[in-house]
Image (tube, rainbow, N blue to C red):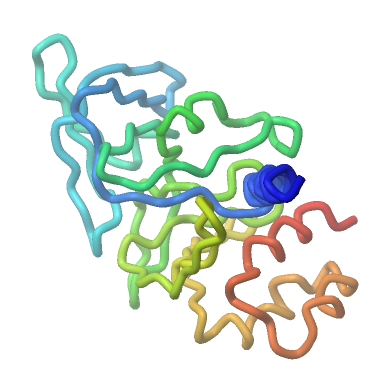
Length: 227
């Protein structure tokens, strides 16, 4: 009976995580599986990922090998792309289609270990750059899009049986509407969360005066569903 209760808890825990947590971000990519790119004109490209150019570790250029030829793409040319994670990346969190509030992404591909990247303007220091950013909240991104920050450190984590919890990144890039994406960190989240969730007073009240950074994905999930 005790084993059954533990198993039931872990299944419920896994379901809740898949519903309300960010997808893992990653920096290393596989050359053994194909990469998929959709260009701004709607045409689709499939090939081997050869090289990525980066600015502050964010993707600023993509080189593919297609039919034996090297072809380079700038973020301005690309609408979206799916890149396969390298086997060394931890990519175990899956999205449950039953909890998905958006049908704009191929969740089956994401669940197979692909990261979803899209073209967006990003504030980096004093400059704005057009980059390809990995979306980490594809199942609840109708109001705020949250992107992986490759330079982020990770908070401490803990284990619950075979499951691992905690260990969230200390910063993300977020995009509201058509505005450029900007960095939100554990340090500045308490200063900006009321403005960010201003259209959902009930969520602000629920969060309280001291928002817990480890619950930011749950806050985003609740905000996406707030009417």
